[in-house]
Amino acid sequence: MADKPSFYSILTADVRYDERLSFFARVLYSDITAMCNVKGYCSAGNEHFADKFKQSKRTVSGTIARLAELGYLRVEVIRDVGKTVVERRIWVQANAQEAMEKVAGPIEENFHTYRKKLPDPIEENFQDIKENNTRDNNNPLTPTGESELFDEFWAAYPKHVAKKPARRAWDKLHADRDLLDALLTALEWQTRTEAWQRDGGRYVPNPATWLNGRRWEDEPQAEAEPDKPPRRREEVEVW
Image 1 (cartoon, one colour):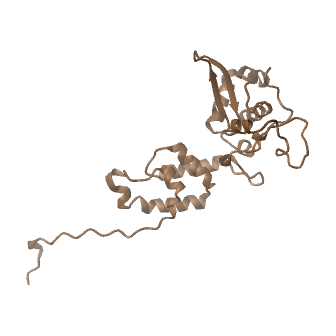
Image 2 (cartoon, helix red, strand yellow; image 1 turned 45 degrees about the vertical axis):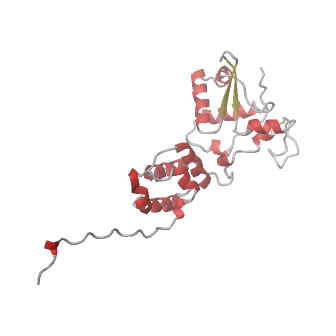
Image 3 (cartoon, helix red, strand yellow; image 1 turned 30 degrees about the vertical axis):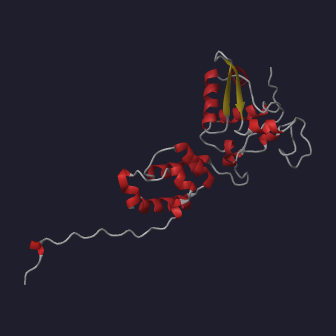
């Protein structure tokens, strides 16, 4: 078999505490990291994992797809000139391929800083956890809680476009309930402005743009009141 599992595997905090994932999904993720120690990616097929964990190939396939959907894995399919699939590569993180190309050999020291060496080499790409997925191990944030807050924001925002970029912008904020309340308060007055109501909301910024620009910190601008129409002659009081 091309993929020889490492003795050690990696189970990051964001995967461990993600309540959207089944326990099998978390174990499968960990096992995939153990098979990336040489090439930076795992090329084992669904049959391998189905046999190891006594699951159906359909369950394995669906679990890998779910991990990829949540951003924990990236699946690359290699095809020949006839468009036939010849290999599947599972990358544990988006920058793993780039990291593998930058290093000449496995790097161990960054994985366990308190140990000089590990008995089995682990590549540098596992250390550079993507910023959007980084979690403080001493105070892990549950993606489920953040997801619920994002859903509230998304429901309140008047323009529902480009949801994935909006979610990426949201994740950078590590929003809590207080911040969400501030966003919703800003949306209450901004959605009533002439600029946002003009042409059926044509000029409402995309939610990702609004979040990245921290537009909830904008201050209300006084809008000019429309001129009152002249009084009709019959309305003029006669003394």
